[in-house]
Image (tube, rainbow, N blue to C red; front, side, top):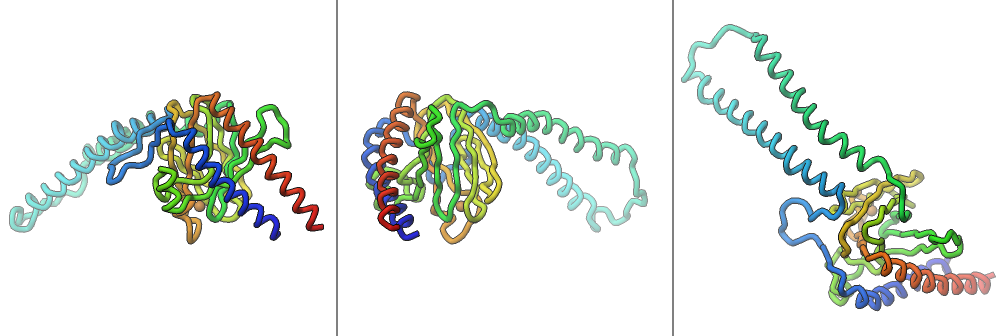
Length: 289
Ligand SMILES: [Cu+2]
């Protein structure tokens, strides 16, 4: 156990150094952190996120606003026109069939209109297309693990690493936003369908990337799946979005979206780097016996 935790610490240490080294190679990659005091959504970079924002901004918000204005106007009419002073003698009727049919049917029609837009979007999010790349993401208290299987099917080359938040000083040094930058980001190729298998090892976490339109619970003992296809290279940030304990706020997600050749180069370099760490692991375990 001691060896495992020492090893994890050494991997994390090596990861921080490696990511500082590689960050210079990724200097030309544009960062898309959330903006200070911004209002509304992050700029969408997947079709799903784009459709979600269109649905919210041009369908839901106008409908909600119209209903809110109508209810407010009705309330004001009642308050001023039918108060005790303005209308001392109350009407005696208590039913109006036409009005009752209208206030039942109109809300039903509004819901039908909303469903025409929302069901196709739900379908698009929920039905997982064929993957170009599958990444397994596991939530821990309080960091994320990413696992990549070897594209050629070599089990020994499965790449697993932890992604831990940088301290403020490290983030400043790396030119990353505080509380969002991590030592070892998730890396994916641009324009490819990425399927994410989301799990948790201890408590419930949630993998959320606002710019991708992705938010899904990471549940212990159950694998959830989601997908995204980013159409713009860059560095994107998300956070765990399920209250998961004392350091819930300190397990951010950093995703680097690279052109495909750069992604392949990254994968090969990481496989080589972690192969040497795994050999070290074997030596330590052997000496422990
Ligand atoms: Cu969490």
